[in-house]
Image 1 (cartoon, rainbow, N blue to C red):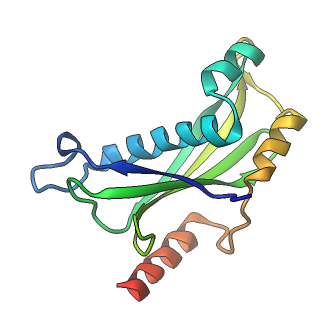
Image 2: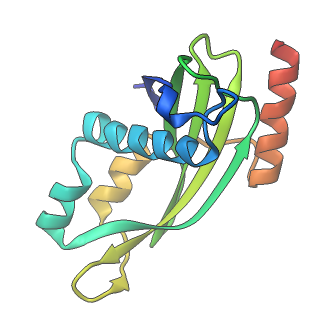
Length: 161
């Protein structure tokens, strides 16, 4: 089983700045949309269905992003995601935007989410089945903090260019 799932996306002209680079805000949009698709396709549910069924969802409480190499209009990029931490109430996901040949990392995003009950407006402990589902896609990274991870990926890009 592949623990890092991915999809390919084409960068649209309307999402770029006047010099043809993907707008910084659009990186986030592309990456979050890809993650939503990954959860549906590989984890087996949509956030909407899950919330309707359980009354709970995940709320982003922290985003950390590093823009490592520009993405240009009409580029095809591979966006991958994986679970890198699962706690009682929180989880952390890494989303990478890469070149199609996977030799260049364009951006890295770490999203920390909290499991949240919509009705009580409070966080709750992850149910056992969710921890197990996330665990199937868990990847233990060598770099344990965001700065170390982004530095590592920059070095990888330099080696591959």
